[in-house]
Length: 121
Image (cartoon, rainbow, N blue to C red; front, side, top):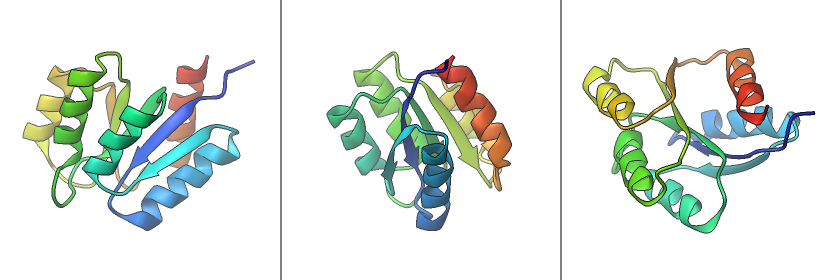
């Protein structure tokens, strides 16, 4: 039996964030949704988050900068990224600091669920 995870989804595109959250919730995981980088940081501070799926490019604090701030406070944080942009410099920075992987947008839901299943094992 796989365990139920607390999953944080960060995306400034509310429709995308909510659809990914619904996907994870339909697989019986607890989901927290953040629509900007500051909300994601606050979510990590207030909740036990097992794994996060972060958009890269967002207005204000981007996903990578949010990730770096979270990793400074929670070195064990497990974060994957999702992007529709060629943000190689930002993604390299994320990988160097412990990002677990990158999904291209639009993201295949089955790939997200496969990764979540591995995280829950």
